[in-house]
Image (cartoon, rainbow, N blue to C red; front, top):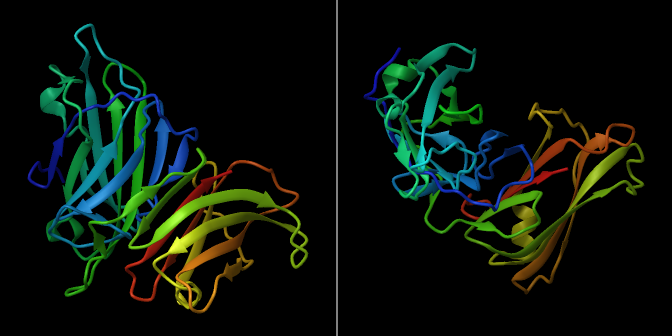
Length: 302
């Protein structure tokens, strides 16, 4: 199926020297996989109604915006014109193609885009009922590529379609956290002073497993009890972002007072056997409060 009615795209390119050190990683909140194959980006926001999506549940028949911030890696000509293209494919859970467009930017293939138009690249996708049919899950695949070179950026967004009447988890106040180059983190409706990550092989309770020691420091806006009562999830991937099944449970310690509002949150997340390769992993941790509004989402590349 091909139709331009479902997909709209506005493009501008931003050239930046502040790049991710890793090639493949996961975006906080949505769990989007991204593969930087010559074209890099600063971060990814998914927005609905102008607000940031905090999970991977999206509605049918509504515009979804993928905002790719601070792109780099395109070939430009003498006039600083960039020749970019975007392929978009929507797949069912069984891998059936529900929608495909080989180049949404085909109308600009000859003229390209002036790099002076600096803003995020915005891809708007509407998962209509006609596209989805009876599917309640899907994967949106986006390939941003250079028509004058070999560089590209690939995104994979596995999503779930919301039920009728289900409230969307959206926010106007979410923000990224400043951390080490191998850490990408975002929070919503809560304050965090800092995040540190390191490998820990000294856990005596499980002598065969290496853990990711994740220190989330000076959390403000929740409480000792609030952190303990919230829900925790974690995922482990190899360097190609294939999921790794982990059977061990994470370990945690929350330090603070019952009366205070500032706490420290220490986690040890199992991610590999000690005998396995030391590097080549991506670990994602997510905590949210019982009302789903407070979120801490951290991705660490090891």
